[in-house]
Length: 142
Image (cartoon, rainbow, N blue to C red; front, side, top):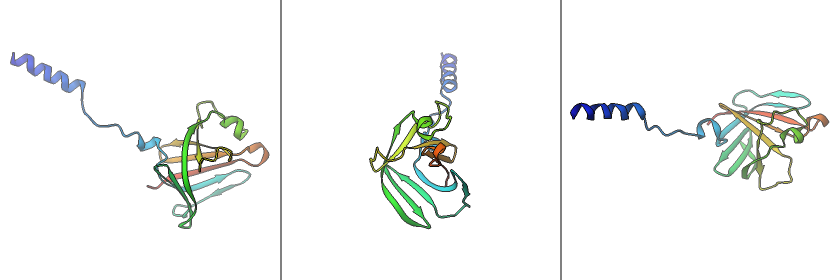
């Protein structure tokens, strides 16, 4: 009887090695503070670490800062949108840039699509074919 109980306990331990909760916010959430590193369109600008150009997402609120001063703030929403290729005039695979950020409930503004990769946030907006497109890369700093 003791032996059966011990084997059952060992079996349970092997089946459930831990109860660590998976934190989906680690690499899949825009929440946090992002610092601008690159802007590319008709020309490219690289920004150094500590440049003061940040984008902060906290709950459903956002802040855009330049040199520590808030230049824009309000509310945002992330919505699914599979029109990145058409909107940006780029050849984007169907499984990329499938979500966009809507700022201040303005569905008529230029669409801002995004991708997350580790601690990098990349946004694309505008039609690149007519010199109106922009790609921005941000690094998570908090």
